[in-house]
Length: 410
Ligand code: AMP
Image (cartoon, rainbow, N blue to C red; front, top):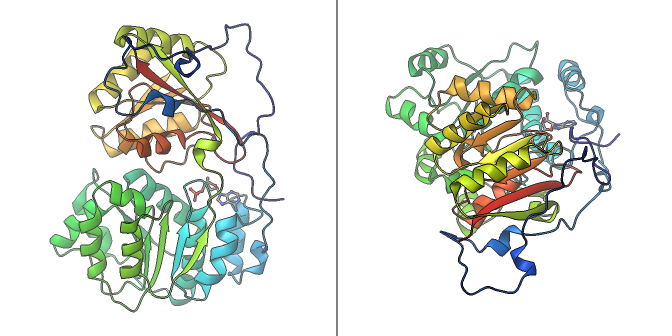
């Protein structure tokens, strides 16, 4: 069976249990009205309206390898099977052979494509043979993504006595220093905390022979370019470098030229997210009306698992509290929360205890959340790129997602 992301395929419409179906105003269908203005709109509202052009079930990727074709240890094969992986995803199928050969690889792939296992499996295989301490460094843009990589590392290396350390902000740095002193095999973290540890002389990098830069484009968006250059500048040039990004911009291109040697590029980018997500706007005159319309939408059964975006940490928390008061189970995720609070919130959204998660852009980046039925932009994103990242949280895998954006209209 081919790789199927864990999302229920949707065929046709879903029963609406008698509630009034959502009919947003559609300004694009009307004549332009000169006297009406959209408040504070950095992006023209027409950019938020789009019918999905890729619908239904796509042809599954035909992998050219089975996991059993890869020369992994029996234990690693067992751990892959225990995770329920049957067939390699496209990025795994196409990059693992090059990675096993020791080549540098540029992987053009998004979260949700299976890229984490694509780099972890060859790394674990190599480690189980050489067992070199502090030999693998993985840099990721957000705490949550770093955490997800660490969890996958633990699953895939079960029973092999291979150890990792997670270096992210919001967690006790002294404990991280103590863990580094014990000599883990793999170090996974975010650029900020790694820089902090490096400045304290506590991040040993001389022994690193494999470097992974995950979601490099997001790290650049988030302003980590100098930190990354500083960290990578400390590494031995005799290393294997794996570089993942969803896009190739001129600055990403420059990084790959500076960091990689004779790389192989593997691209598994499929239809643009925006082509597989039904997008529309909801017009409201003011904040009160926005909230009223939001509650009306969330009252419909079809809004099963909703990722709601707000602009500020404070606004996100307030919105989530408001929903809770209205009896809608909701959690918030933003930078003012501790690492453990963010994890708890993410977990309860993932396992459907909370129907709504309200997030800021930064907190939601790179998260792998299956089955999000709707993305709602309660506050508009600052840039179109942010918009595309936001709506990319729905319509994953083979399904069509839905995205709604509030526009204030006076
Ligand atoms: P990633 O893109 O690495 O964040 O992975 C997205 C999701 O797909 C994760 O939940 C993985 O556990 C899952 N996944 C990755 N590769 C496979 C595979 N070959 N078969 C089934 N599930 C997979």
